[in-house]
Amino acid sequence: MHELSIVASLFEILEEKANEQEAKKIILVKLKVGKLAGVVPEFLKTAFDMYKNGTIAEEAVLEIEEVPFKIECQKCRAETEREDFVFICPACGSTALRALTGTELLLEKIELET
Amino acid sequence: MEKKELFVREEILGSNKKIAAEIRRKLEQESILTINFLSSPGSGKTALLERIAETLKPRHQMAVIEGDIETERDAERIRQKGVPAWQITTGGACHLEAKMVARLISEIPAETHFLFIENIGNLVCPASYDLGESLRCVLLSAPEGDDKPKKYPKAFATADCLIITKSDLIPFVPFDLERAGNEALDINPDLRIFVTSALQPRGIAELVRYFIESRVNMIQRHA
Image 1 (cartoon, rainbow over the protein chains, first blue to last red):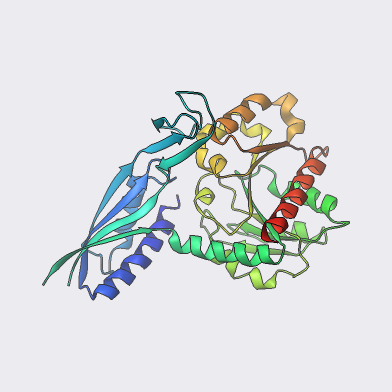
Image 2 (cartoon, rainbow over the protein chains, first blue to last red):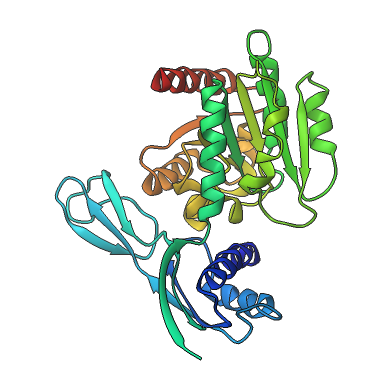
């Protein structure tokens, strides 16, 4: 359960961006969370709602886009979407694979009022 | 009042990564190999460090940062081996973060060859936080069972080596060494695997050799 720590880091960025933009409030926060980023979107939402009281994002809605885990085989170039972390190419059996997406934890965009 | 859409596209843990990169740069420049130990509570991290200290000691200097929720107990155990140790108590937090390690870096003696960081006992959260280590080791003790790699994939996927601990208990518990190894290799084909027992002791020399080789490789990379 490190979602609260992640939300604390998120708010550092939010405060910084709001200051830069001289925003009065943040109304929407959109995250991209990889399926295998090691965080639970539902807990992130709970932590966000706990944390936002009294901040510039007090009225903000949190939107989370879950990103599937995709790997590319370095041998046969097949792209596969996976629900687990297994690093074996289903097309050719190679273990030389590269993760394309699915481990990110990104602040994608914010909407604010100035 | 004006509404504005701002595309940020920033990593949420970007500041942790930045601090970690700075720690790594600094320690590697001083030829210190930093090793982050990840595992469940009670998998034998401290006992393994005690054996590593005995094996490394004649020729190498090591230091240890102990992460725990409460108490100085682990740091005290390590100090009894004549090894400098610092205790970070998080007071409840389930993982160490780079900024906690950064505060201690200036205290690490310059003649240190190996800095071990014993993370909070937890196979989930610590996996998301780079601490500036050069090597990440995940420990799995035989009594925990051979099915853990796929249950806690991130810890195994981000590690450089897997250390099976308490191998002396394998005859008494349902633990298939081959299955554990294969599960872990499915997730991370480059994983190096070591089988150890701190009690017997067993496999410690091989593990220490791996750390020494890794340090030589690190120094050559920077040469």
